[in-house]
Length: 232
Image 1 (cartoon, rainbow, N blue to C red):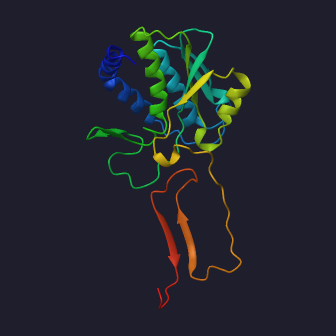
Image 2 (tube, rainbow, N blue to C red):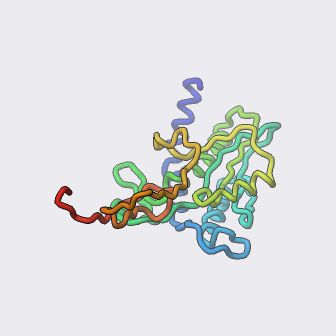
Image 3 (cartoon, rainbow, N blue to C red):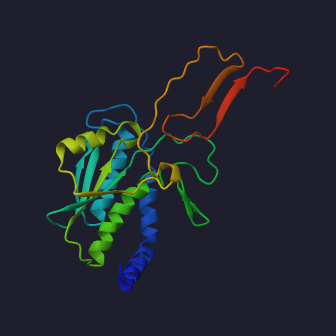
């Protein structure tokens, strides 16, 4: 990237900083944890509402939108071209959990330059990133000849049926960028292990072990109940 273009992009981001935070915050206020399936809302009302809001924000920004809420995804796009550059994000989240101190989980707040709340990073920021890349290309008249497409999913945390539907119903972008997961251990994440463990010999000292609300989130706390022994 040449220096002048880099400066233009930096200025664009600074000018849109408050708008970006506001859009992420709006999306995060909906507790989009998967719930009971309803007609045309396969992952529950909150997830569907979060997807609808993401589409509304895309419309407010002047992009073309297609909401396939009954299939669990939406398409927000800008421009035309023989090729498509895709940005993938999702609006659903894992349960809030306990022990929030900087903010309430679904009332995000900026503290010391950081935005706190459930979903501010995973992955409402990813949706906003796609939108504001498209806005930067449009507003700065950047010379990109491809169509830009943000694919907004709705059940990434609970099985990714949304992407099964997208893959079956829509052409795949030529290139996909996924703005999700800067935690270093997830950089090369391939899968999650769903395990059930047993032992030939009973755990005589361990009475119980518990931690977390869902298997795909780092638990806020974990506990073990252990029998007291002289050695311990």
